[in-house]
Image 1 (cartoon, rainbow, N blue to C red):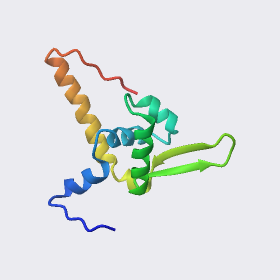
Image 2 (cartoon, rainbow, N blue to C red):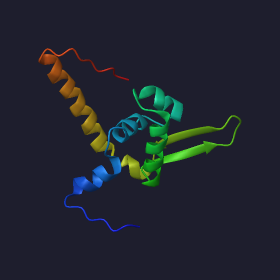
Image 3 (tube, one colour):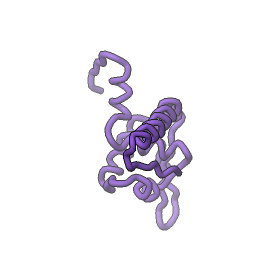
Length: 117
């Protein structure tokens, strides 16, 4: 384990959930378990390689659980771990702020929409 020091708590948070894709993956998983193919379909622009990498990192950080079903063909599902669910308030806040931001941009006359699930 490497020795790390953070100046403020948000650095530690961003170290785990930062980047372009992890918050989007986590927001998708807060509604329940998903297969990798469903995640890829629901996340515009992510490559299979990047999705796999991000899922592995989140699993290594104990934020998500990976469940493998012993069947043919093999089936894998990802879900938020108990520890990952502790991010629920943060994820809810990020999603709510994003919805408000889209509304703000629409009020400014920008042609933007939010495709709700």
